[in-house]
Length: 237
Length: 217
Image (tube, rainbow over the protein chains, first blue to last red):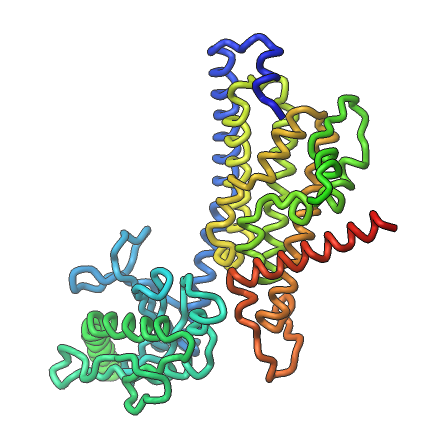
């Protein structure tokens, strides 16, 4: 199809006509996009919240409710409104009777293809990781994406040891990835054959995230527990 | 492809009379199938046809953008100056792609995640631009709708053909329902990019053999 011959047949349009057409179409398109955006926004937000909630409840068995907190400069505070970027978010899950079911922590790191974003569940009473879920990954389908569904690999995160040292300032043993089948200690993450780099990346992500955040989370959990005990004592006494 | 006159007739025929012709619909399904005959829009065809559901969603999203942009291009065909027509088409297509993107997010975040960047890449799908330029800009709204529906359904059908084959062999499932016994060894290559090329080649081979048979009898 020869665009030039078509142009030649007609007298060339003036600049004003072209401008009018482009601006007209631009305004029309912008209007359509804005309307769709406004129309779908509440549903998209709800979908995202539901997806996150599902992930949180998956890593915290028994959780029925969640509360979002942010960790900022060594302080934990309840998240109000929109979360700022680069702020570590944690989700505290409660079971039916309102008791603590665990704490879900978001973490991310470089995988084989791109950044992998994960969520893991932490049980402060037993000092263990009790669940794991991949929020976002672009790992190779069929190979690297085994980190999401390989049952033997997921077994790693049913009771991964993240006990703190005596003075509660750091982890007793850092979480480390090991070769498949060589897991001997409860703080090691067994790899996957065929997904070596991806599975090792998960081990490292959890390793560095737990080292940084678990002591802090544990401390504030302990504080809140003490406050609760005091309150109970006051009530009973 | 070995019969260029067959291909050319469909793509470049611009019926000047205003009557609707069902041929505009039917040609996209088979004779001028956008994937198997015109071999257009290969990027999404190869990239997101790793499962049947992804292929179907991608096909429908493309068909929707194709339909809406054909309608708008056709109704504005006397208003758009020739010099800026491509820019106008791209603007219109990009708008509907953005709308589709929001719509898919509103329907299912999971689906949006698995289609990834390929939704935004519908903008540069040459199938849509070629239909706008070669058909919608020269034909009535009614015929443009028929053309878009035919091409859209043909594109979705072709994507589904690829997606189903790749999912069955690469994952042992169809629409996530397992098809084989537990000990079935998946052909992982089929859900990797290379598998897309193999499957496309196989389908093209089948199509061309069938076409040759039809011509020789």
